[in-house]
Length: 132
Image (cartoon, rainbow, N blue to C red; front, side, top):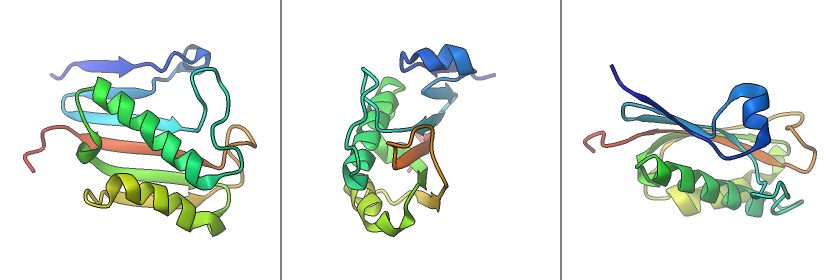
């Protein structure tokens, strides 16, 4: 039986809603939907799809490192975007992290996210030491 490790972000919402930034069980890591908010709750890259996406992947990279993984361990990304017409901006930032790795990915337009200032929310799945 594998051990479960939760990786909190420190957000007050984690206890209120009941979630963690990431969860690792065995060699599988799931990272929860992540938006472009800094440690003080300020929006990063307001009105800029590329900057928000890039910042989110930087946040995700940090929690993966805490869990003993890296971006090369990512096998799937899911991007929920409020304006699909900006797909090239989201995609440009995605490519900066994953051009060589090429995980499976999904980009879906949604009507809104948790705050109107957020343009994108991203989840990732990773498998550590998968003998690749």
